[in-house]
Length: 158
Image (tube, rainbow, N blue to C red; front, side, top):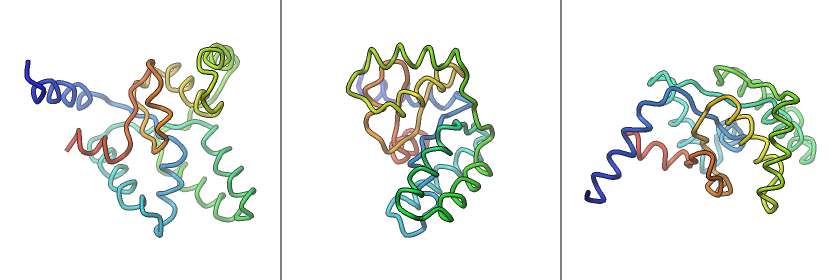
C-alpha cells in the first residue's frame, strides 16, 4: 500500500469519530485574540461544532486555567477563560476515585511526563475518548491515545 493510501485510511478513521478531548492550552489560546494560536484554535472549535464532534475536557482544565491566572495575577482573565471553556465544551468530565487509581498506575509507567498530562490522559481513557487535541507535544508520547495539535487535526480532517 502506498504512503498516500495509508494517510487516507488514517484520516478516514478519525473522520468517523464522534468525540475529542481538548487540552487546557487550546482553551487558553482561544481566550486570547492576541495569541498566535488564536485563529487556528477558533477554527478548530468551529470545525468540531459544525461536524457535530463532541468536545470534552475535564475539571482539571478549569483548575489549570485558574492556577495559571492566579500565578500571573490575572484572575479575571482566568475566570473569563473558564467560563468560555464551559460554554465551549459539550461536557465537563469529572474525576473520580477509580480514575485516580488508574492515573497512579500511569504515573509509574510515565515517570518523565507532567502529572497533569497523565490526569488528562486518564480522564480521556476512562471516557473512551481516543483522541486528544493539544499544543503540548508530550501527549504524542502516550501509546494509549492519539494526539494532534489543532493544526495537524484540521489538516487531516479538511
